[in-house]
Length: 429
Ligand SMILES: [Fe+2]
Image 1: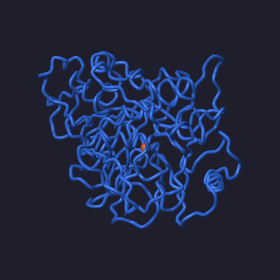
Image 2: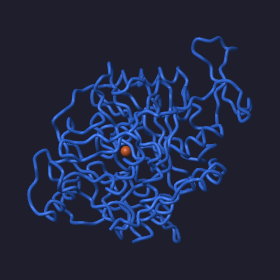
Image 3: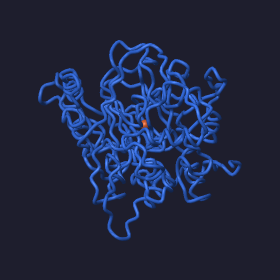
Image 4: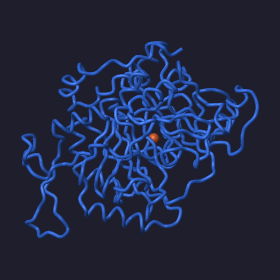
């Protein structure tokens, strides 16, 4: 589970539906669709000569959608045969068995059109050797406190836990904590797997994310380039545990990271405008997964009034990503996202989640597909970098220039960026 958190989605989080989930047209009507760029995939029901062409790159319209919304759903990106094999592997798992390295699951990216599509739109990346198996069992609203510091049943949007990816998370206290803010802070950061070692960059959370990525404690968010989320069950009806996102929210978060960097050189929690914990949350120690200034702008993106927790606090409305088995959602890293409660499902929600980084960020390092902080080892180990290679500077650059690592998006970015209004955070203290 990522981000410790919640369970699912992209960090245990859930997610929502895309207003214009885009389908890959199986026909060749687009002038960008070329037979030479197509995979020939055999349908299990078809004879050897009956092969179906599957597009292997995004059309210009799909790229504009990805640029605007920050995510896109590719219909039927994974053939039925691979979906069936993946589902069968999950069904055959023994109790407690990890499927993180199951080839039947990594094949969903490595042997489908997802790889050529991403190669074209983003660039080269390490074929995932591991997967985050995002299985969310059906459940009614529950009483426990989530990492946001609220009871799950009290959070709107199916118990959302919307967050920026790559953040330190520890187990949420299940009774209201007491003490000064400083005392609570120290207890929280000491509750991870390394215990009380003070406030240093060696501290990691129960989700294995470092408190700070860099030794100088100027970067507190891990980063990669893209999420790929392959659905293995029907998620076309709302409330079955979908991953959810805020369309357009990627720009809001990127702009905040840039404002932080320009203001102070720091990016992430404990940088300007972003305290680590919410001491006013019902349990007295919620994680602040998105700063208030970002939450306000996300709410403003929505025409509908936001829903609130019982304390009157408004929360940005996420859109559930509705998918059918074999569909793949691709989102940019900066997309605020969440898992959601599988309240109405007739089976567990099954999203196979891959964390992809453009190889150019760190060509010598191998990314497995599960870590949200690949500049460090999975358990926060320090990695070796050659002289002149500052991984923290590279990641700050990527966080604040989010399309730079999307090599096949550059024309769309150049055409569309001048049309956008700037996002201003100068009012933030
Ligand atoms: Fe996440």
